Every structure is written in structure tokens, then in C-alpha cells.
Amino acid sequence: MRSYLGWVDFSERDRNDVLDLIRLLRKKETVDELGVGVVRDTLAEQFFPGTSTIQTRPRYLLMVPWLYQRLEGLLSRRAHYNEKLRREREIGHRLRDYEIELIFGLIANETSGRGGIIGRVAKEKLERFPSNIYWAGLARLGIRQWDMTQSQYHRYLASRYGGSSGETLSAMFQMRKDEADETVLARPREMWCPQLPSPPTGFHKEVDLSLTQEEAQFLMERVAIAAPKSLLDYLLRGDWGDVADGGVWNHPVVEIVPHELARVVEHARCFAEVHHVAALLYNLLLMRAKNDQEGIQDFEERIQAWSDTLMPRWNKLQRWCSAFEDFWWLSELAPTRGRHQRSTQDHRFLSRWCDLLTGCDQPEVVMELPEAHQLLRIREVELKGTRARLTHPEALDRWKGESGTVQIAYRWGTARRFLADVHDALRGDEEAESTEEN
Image 1: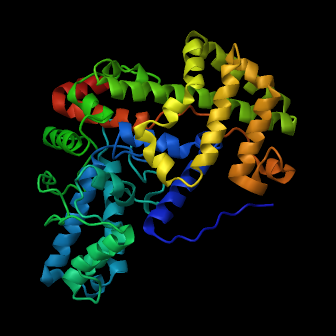
Image 2 (image 1 turned 180 degrees about the vertical axis):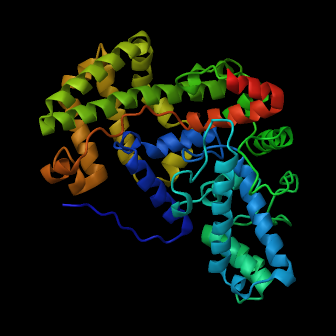
Image 3 (image 1 turned 60 degrees about the horizontal axis):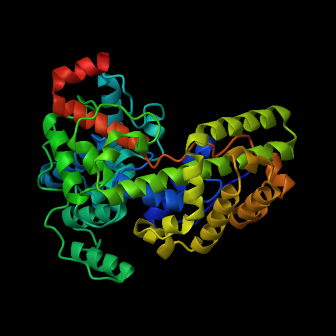
């Protein structure tokens, strides 16, 4: 029987969250099967603010505002004004046309070989365009200065330029204030940061994803102002080269950041490592439930290999597990504890998992621990109810194989691309080309 996913979206953010979920479901290895995504994302935002796993290249942080400026320019020129653009929906359609034009322009002008073009394959059938993917990041880095959704901004543009009955800007900010039930500070005069570099002439047709030196400097400054002393800020300050295979904790920057930040990075590493044991065991239990002999052997070998990888750190990881409360009560995880309705269940599951690992002299011992098997069954039922595969044969029959087996990386892949583009631009065009050839 075919499965369907349906939802009621009460806001643009709800819709985007579901689109992100659908995208991740297509990449089975990245699915958050054990419900630790809130903890993961809270730490990722601390380390690399303004990024997300679906972002590709940082120049989109400039190209999206440029597209909007182009749209606003069209709206402001009365001689070219189209009556249809009085409506919010038509403004969204015109922006979409601009973004499709950008996709084809990027494809035509790509030379670096680094990829990262959003919509390269889907083109005009793309479900989520760069303006939406980068909308939150633009606000976090202070490039977008007004606190509103895309739909609200389109409504404002329709009202300002079309004389429609849409809300005024003041009304929109008042609505946001009422929704948040908090005082809204005096809004900036402009939607976009005044220091935003100007777009190249005809950028939407003759453009690539490489930053200019001016653009790279602008992004560095935005991170320094909006997210000072974050890992991203420290990483941008020096040209480190691409030296950290594996997690960000392998990067030399960890040796020079303040002690508290280095401590949080080590906590994040330990959490990622002990969670990965649980993710592999969960998949092994599913393979056993399906009596998939090839899959069973594969995951037994992968657990053994991961155990061998962890053994040099196992004593340290056991100490971390025995002091799990130190991690859970980090100030950086306050959003997880304060707003997440499942936080009590999360704490109980993670705390118990750490207790079990503390009693294992080697990581692979947990593979045959009945208490660990039962803990994972209970956790899956908490998260999925009748869709839990370990307890419901119908759900197990629908399982297509391996899922949730990529180790947590806290958006490090996105951050590395961000750093590479910025540092290449700051070195200068000639040296950047040499680096790409090598």
C-alpha cells in the first residue's frame, strides 16, 4: 500500500519545515529516526548561525536581495507597471520567473566545477527556490532587516506599489508583535542592509556562484556583527585551508577559540559519537526484524568498525556519558529545553542511552544488550506511534532500507563551502583559480 504525507500549514514557516522534511526523507541516510534533531539543530545554529543543510553557496545571500531589488525597481517604474502586480500572488510569480532565469544563467556560466546551483536538475519544476531557502539566514545575518515572512513582504510590496488593500508596513509589524507577544524594536528604514554590495550589471543572466572580494568582505562583516565569537566567525578570520576531514572538532580553530566554546564543541562531538552507535543499532534491529541476512551482516560490521574508531576515546566518552547532565544543562541548549514539548522524553531517552554505554567496556557490546534493544523500541513508539517499525509489522514492511545512518555534523558541510568561497575570493581571483585547478 502506498503511503501519503499530508499536513495543515498554519504559517509559511510550517510549510517550509515540511518541505525540509520531505527533502530529507528522500535522503534516507539523513532522516532523524531517533528524534534528536532539535538538539542537533540548536547546536548547529550556535556554531554556524544563518546556515542550513539545504543551503549550497554563500553568494545566494547576495543574489536573493538583488532579485528583490530588481523586482522593486520594476514595481517603482510606473511606465512599466503591470496592473496584475497589484496582487501579492502575482508578485510571487514574478519573483519566481526571476529565479528561474537565474537558474539558467548560472548553468550557462558555470566554470568552477564546484556545483551548488539550486535547481540545476529541476529547473522550473523546482519546489523550493533560493529566496525561500535563504530567507531565514538573511535575517540571522542582518542582511534582511525586517522581521516578516516572504508572503508578508510580497503583501507589503503589493500595497506600497499597487495601491491595493493589503496591510501597511506598520500593520504588518504590529501583527508580528501580537503573534510574538513581545515588544518590537524600532524597525530599520530599509528592508535590505545598506552595506549590501551592488549587483553586477545583468547579473541574473551573466553570473556564477563565485564571490568577489567586496562580497566576501561584506559576508565576513555581517557574520562578525550578527554572530560574533561563533565558530563561523572564528573560522572566517583566518584562511585555514580545507584541513578538517570529518567533524569540525578536527579543525585547528578549536585550539584557539575561547575555552567555553571549545567545551561546547567537545560536548557536540561526544553527543554525535554516542548517538551514532544508537542509529547503527536501530538499523541492525530492523534488519534482524526483516530477517535480512545481508543487511544484518552489513550493520554488525559497521557497528564493529565504529567501535574500533571510538576505542581510543572510549574512556573519555564513558566519562561524558556518566556526566550527561552537564551536557543537557548547557546554556546553549536552553532553547531545546524551554520550547520543545518533547524535551522530557528526549532527556529520558538520551540519559538512559548514556547509562547503558557507561556500563559497556567496548561500544559493540551494546549490540547484544537487551536493555538497549528495548530502549530503542520504546523510543520509536514515543516518536511514531503505530508507524514504529520495530513494533508494527505493517510499518516494517514499508521500510525501504537503511535510514538515519549519517553521523551528526552540525551543518559542517554547508559551513565548509561557505568558508571555501569566502577565502578564495579574499585571496584574489588568480590564486583562487590556481587552488581550484589543484
